[in-house]
Length: 368
Image (cartoon, rainbow, N blue to C red; front, side):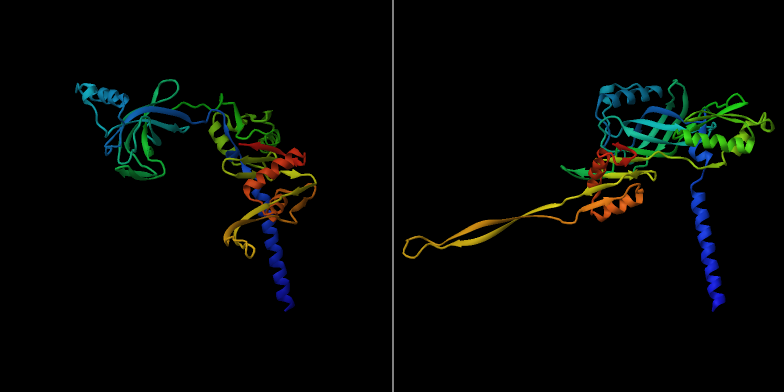
């Protein structure tokens, strides 16, 4: 029996150590997950095209007639614009992001959005549409059947709709015609850019790089670390990037509370602390109840018995609604305390604003 108890104790100790190691390891992330190499970025493309094959849900304006006339003219068919009144065609904007390192012949997803007064793009097919970058060059061409995340149908003044039917996607609908050029620095120096600039995180990245590769990294600012490619990777910077992006560091985060008053969403960062403060969350309930009584006249007065409707008004405020938050409370303490108050997300927004105005919130309150 004692032997089984010792084995159980050892197992629990081992589980505790594994959980401790897992917790400490979860605080570290790879460099590839918190930043990117300067120059490795996507490029935005945009085009204006025609979606055909709609069931009477297309555009009715002049724009679709003009574009449809240009389209037919390109195929040697001259038609007067006044004769082009098809409601089965819609003008759409076509957008996509060209990922870095993409090559000719690869496919990327595109998003379509109705430009005119089209009611739905359901069942439509996008005609060949060139997609241009900001420099005016065509980098991809889009074409294909439109996929929607919703629908709409109606007749005679009645209808039903789900989600948005005037936007859609074509998975793999754009064919890359021109690749974007990318050079990793000058072959000797590259720059690592943090997605969330922070001096502490950038300093830790610099230390991790210097610890593994020698004195190669230099902290430039909160969002940039300049790296000299080591000698053993000279002439092959891509291999060095593949090696360094697997390094793990512990990123630091600022203490922020983000509040979206439109949706009632509250996001509290783990570094948020509060000083000692008392919070009173009152809940006043006012109820009005109708009551019927009878007005009975005095004997021999000649009056009549009349029913009368009166109102009973009561007001009640919940007691024991004051909660004390201790100094240096963590985010978990704050959430649990506010939940004990019975606060809804809307109430928490007001409470956090009051705590911030009282100077007890040790962090940045961001309102959206």
